[in-house]
Length: 99
Image (tube, rainbow, N blue to C red):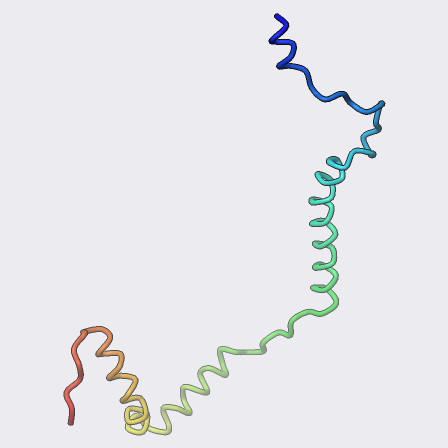
């Protein structure tokens, strides 16, 4: 019986502490509080500094494609030849034939 009492004996508590005087309470409350404050700061930054809208990016992309088509595919094929050879080499594992 005395052995079980010795095992249950814990360090004596300080004289009646209030909850706000305990450091662990502030550790537990501090983390979520910090996240809430950071979210309000992020909200403020998002509202005061919005990203500019991209106007009609689809139309601009179509115009770029038309411009590239107007230049001709021959010129594009020559400029892309090293990339195409490297891509084919990576896919097949075979070295391209030397010309």
